[in-house]
Image (cartoon, rainbow, N blue to C red; front, top):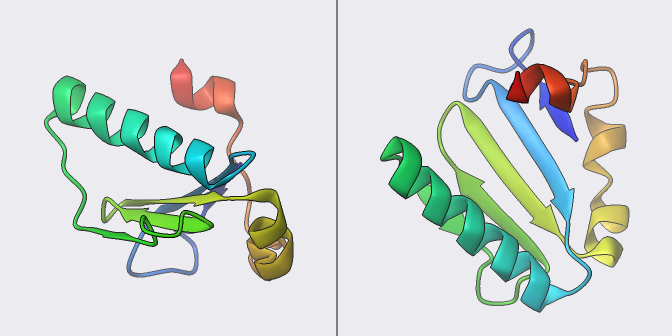
Length: 96
């Protein structure tokens, strides 16, 4: 899920929320995203938090903040509900 925070947030434009089945998979997702952005776009994150445990990994690229959760952690924190009034971005619009 991609949430457009531009109408209400000064520190970032988008939250990208995704889920891995377990901590090992969340780490693999983050490794893949970081690797591709580094090679394809020469981007490195400003900060990475939570990589040790892997239940909620936050990767801050300033304009975009990636949140990778395990299912239990995503349900517990409920960022979709917290930011539920923000518009979501359709994935095909992003990749087009």
